[in-house]
Each structure stands twice: as structure tokens, then as C-alpha cells.
Image (cartoon, rainbow over all chains, first blue to last red; front, side, top):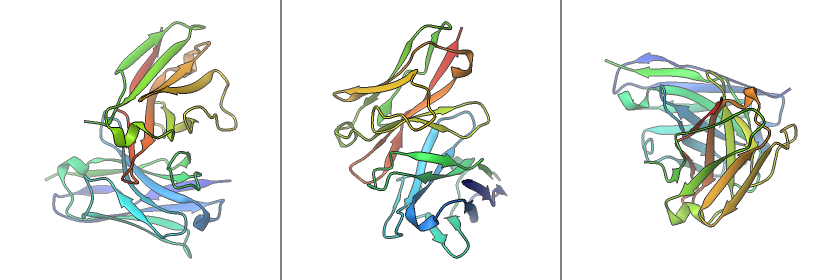
Amino acid sequence: QVQLVESGGGVVQPGTSLRLSCAVSGFTFSTYGMHWVRQAPGKGLEWVAVLWYDGSNKYYADSVKGRFTISRDSSKNTLYLQMNSLRVEDTAVYYCARDDDTRGHYSRFDFWGQGTQVTVSS
Amino acid sequence: QSALTQPASVSGSPGQSITISCTATSSDVGVYNFVSWYQQHPGKAPKLMIYDVSNRPSGISNRFSGSKSGNTASLTISGLQAEDEADYYCSSYTSSRTLVFGGGTKLTVL
């Protein structure tokens, strides 16, 4: 069955880096777009980034553009989020999600991971 | 401030119907019919309930329905049940090829 398992979260200081991983199984990685979505404590969902199914395009929220990078290793069935220059406001639970919308309109996040906590604090 | 505005909270009694609105405040969002709705219970990952304004994924109860008029999308839940109590988020594709979520609506079943 489809599974997404995030890892790599932790407590880090402002200005440092962290790499999140999302190990997927149960489906062909290269046929689905993949997203990162975050949720700050007690707040709503915030979309972070997308990697198109064919790897041809990546897009980011303005709040992370230039600091975060989404990528994947198909040989390891793993999605990554490299987070640099972390800020206190990046503190959140980070979810990876599979996008079943092959049109590239981000309309069907049909499977989600359980989330990994990132805390940025001095 | 999100480009999608939702009421902070709604409530209803078991068996009743409620509607949650989602209004696009920007034209680069409101023109699209790629609106989705997600349900999130405390401490859990979100769950897709509606996509493309009004389509239900397999396994989602037909008590959940979606619609859109102009810049406002709506999620209606009929025959409210206790397990429907959760946070609900709308989302929409944008002209920048990004995604935006609404601020979320807390549904309380009285």
C-alpha cells in the first residue's frame, strides 16, 4: 500500500540548515508530483514546494524561495527538502504529500505522511 | 494573509447541514476551478475530501459536496455526524504555478 514517511526533523538554531526526507513506497515515484506542506503550531496549512512528476519543474512559496530546495532520488524512492538559512518562523510540522493531479494543478493530495517536527530556536 | 478567506469557525447539530465558504481575494486564484477541500483531525495529517471544486475521491461519503460561484467555493456537509468535527481547509492553484491554502475553519458538532 502507499506509504510516505518523513524524517530528519529536529531542533536547530536560526541560520542553520536541515534536510528533510520523505521515503515513499507502494507507487511509482516518477509518475506523481510531490509536495511539501507545513503547519506551524496552532496554525493552518501552508504550502511550501512542489516537484513535478517528471522532475521538470519546481516551484516554491515566496516565504521559502531561495532558501529551500526540493529534490528527489528515484533510486531511493525518497523526496527531500533542503532547508537553509532557517528562521524562527520556519518552525512547523512538515508533511510530504503525493499529488494525483497529472495536469499539474495540484488538486489531489491523496496521500500524506505523518509529518516531522522542525523547531528553529536559539 | 491568505489569498483564500474562510470563516474561522462554524457549528451545527447532528443531522443538520453546514456550509463552509472559501473566497478568493486575488484574481490569480479565483479564476481557477482547481479548488480542493481537506479535513484535518487534531494531530493527524490532512485528508482530501473534494477536488476540482465538486469531485469526491473514492471512499468519501456523499454527505460531502462542493460548489463554486464566482470567486467563492463552498463545502457543504449534510447529515452532520460527530466524527465530522475537525478543521477544514480549502486550497487553490494559482497563476504562479503555486498552491495556496485558506486559513482553515474549525467545525464544531454541537
